[in-house]
Amino acid sequence: MAPNTKLILVIGATGAQGQAVIDALLSPNKSGQASPWRVRALTRDPTSSHAQALAARGVESVRAGSFSDAVAVATALDGAYGAWVNTDGFTVGEAEEIYAGMRIFEIAKQTASMRHYVWSNLRYVFKKAGYNTEYKAEHMDAKGRVGEWLNAQPSDVGPDGLAWSQVTTGPYMDTLQGGIFSPLNVRADGTVVFAAPVEGGRVPLIALKDLGWWARWTFDHREETSARELNVTTERVDWEYLVATFTKVTGKRAVFKRLTLDEWWANFDQEKIQNPIANAKQRGDGSTTIRENISRFWRVLRDDVIDKDMEWIRSVHPDTYTLERWMRENEYDGQGTSILKNTQDGKNLFWFNPEVAASL
Image (tube, rainbow, N blue to C red; front, side, top):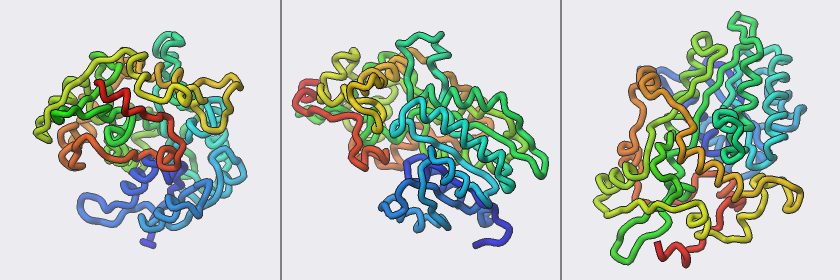
């Protein structure tokens, strides 16, 4: 352990975001000096392969427990200087995520060692769209509601106070690999088909390495980021630009096939997309379904509901990725496996039907 380092608890450590945050927190600075941070992780299953891999990343301890377990959270926060809090609504559902997000902050306020609480946020898109239910994407709104509640809480940058910050992100650029944004078909002539119900929407994609950079920068700048929402992304990407960049990088022919929501959903198992969006919920209990929630999410992206100030973002982080740089660095060819932990754990949101997609 490096001397004088401060401990950050990462909630959501075994997911794609958490791993990116941990990598950034533990990395040396630009001058090669050792990081001032060390990391503790909270995870439901410390024996899982995801959790075991954390030790190889330099995580000093892994604590067992769920983010919705107040006792486990309090134990994990004890002795920590800061916390990166990324709750998982896809597991517990909207209502429990909102309550947990509020409760974790309350516990942090009760923890003598805590000085910096960072909430991993998403836009409250239901509100931004005028409370139009066509845009009520629960996985975004739960975090956004907590973010608005956090705005009303005190943020104390004094030596004995608890400051809070919010880092508001969005869909991962990395889900171009085996995720919701990946190609649906490769035609017999080799043409790669990016098919989506996004029309001309400029989707604010964030590369996970950029997300990690913003997490590290926030902890490195406690006073500057106190009581602030950092609304960040990597690049706004429309799908014509996506296919043009893909062809430029790979040399492969690609097309953007514009689909309606119904046409897009036809490429997936029609029975399973009626399952609840949250893994803990049961069919028939009134929960929002996968199809309902993701349809609303696509409308949010299609209609540019999410705002981002790219000039400010690049002024703070001049080395922000571009789509082209991300593709080249990841040797992206339109294929790849999902980086999302729920998918890796077999809790798929989508069950692809390649026979239908073959006609695209």
